Amino acid sequence: STDDSLTWEPLGFSTGVNGLCATAGDTLFVATDSGIYRITGGSSITSALVTSSPVRSVSVRNRVGFAVCADGGIFRSTDGGATWASMPTPVPGTMLNAVRFANDHVVYACGDGGTLLRYEDATMGVGAVA
Image 1: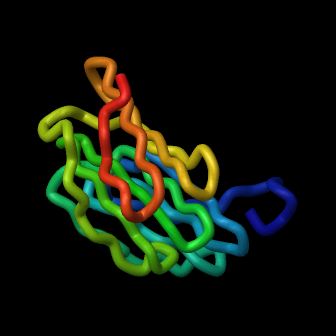
Image 2: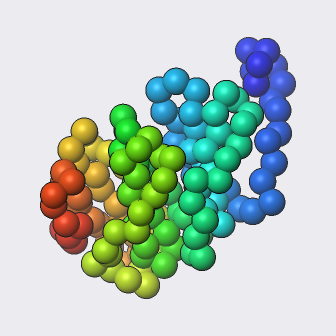
């Protein structure tokens, strides 16, 4: 909205939208059935990552981002979400539903079957905690 939320502007995606992450400034990351999109300036939409499995959640803090997929895939960005790289997953085939930063160094992801993952710093691996 550009008028104090009196009206909303539909941006329109041709795929399912599963989650959002707003960052400082004017960047919004959108998790969809076909990947991650980045919206800047309120309406400039660019594709940041195309996936074969739906992206269920995305979280970006400072210049680091994480995304989780329905097939257990985990992606990481270290450049503010411009590019994303696949990470090893300890739960292949398990639907991951959400990912969130606890602080600047710790990220949690959760999924089906009681899956809870913790990731700490760039040199640590992803490991199940419950």
